[in-house]
Image (cartoon, rainbow, N blue to C red; front, side, top):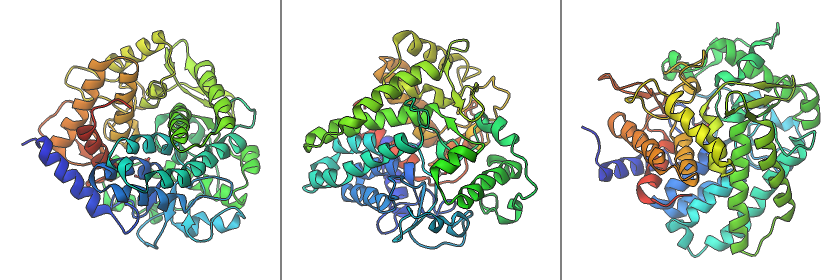
Length: 442
Ligand code: GLC
């Protein structure tokens, strides 16, 4: 029996409670036993409706792991846990003079989420806490420092577009977008990841990336450690430098939240205003593919577009920066290239006619709740309310019938579960809570 709204809310709240660890929330107790960066932003939004004080703690905990350069790491290893690979001993971030000493971290980042996560929180009970404004005055400058880090270190040609140096930074770990770059990496020093991986012991290997790709993910991490996490050296030497649509669109949306909230506490970030305007223009100039009529990533190392249509390509809608004819083209894609029929669930992470599409493997086809939540808000921003309602209904329906999974099979129901990866996944719970509690667009 599908869950009612009330049941869904109480199950979602229970997942958050269960994954809470005295100051921060695990994405999944089974697969991800630390605090993750963009997860923390999405998770804080849910806490805002359930236990608002924890939203503030969640955000503070992550920013305790911020680097001297402003980088916010993708994992904060607050407490040791041997059941995870790659752990701090692989990352070796102590090789960088910029890494924090009070908490161990990874050495890469994830998409910018805090400007808009805080904006959403402001509209929840968290925004009515007596310490809300002092909290904003403390955190917003740290969010701004992260955005400045990106512009300073990740935009070598001053284009307004920042690059990701690892597929894990893009958030969409094994999207087929990265295949040509990863496949071209050759080495006789690949680690024996089959022996080291923990994820495939905990969930079905067919739902996760294969070893051949995992070796290359680790190869990049080893390279960064060898280069002491020096961004200039990485920019000069790494094979993976990508200007991604999702990352840059979220940077724009996060900036909008940062600027608006800053005004409520008398803070201005003028330097970022100008940089943000350049990002908006550059996304529309460089990442729009006129032949496909879709936004695609750009491989800065090899100077070529990476023309795979994925759900990341819709995110300029979330940033509110698409001219109307482009928004129309995106809506057209969503209704036709991302489904094979009316019973398919929006929004697969990869277009169904892409050769890399796989409905069960991680970011190569399954539906993800965080992307859907941003897509739903983006469609509303573009005035496409009916399509936005469909994205919301499809998402909640998947969760009602299958549970709080990490990702979902987009194909029509066949009697089995559509839930994939980790169960009791925190951002799935958190964003369902937000969708049920706050009907306002973001
Ligand atoms: C996976 C996802 C990534 C997420 C992490 C923790 O690696 O691909 O986006 O942040 O899990 O949930």
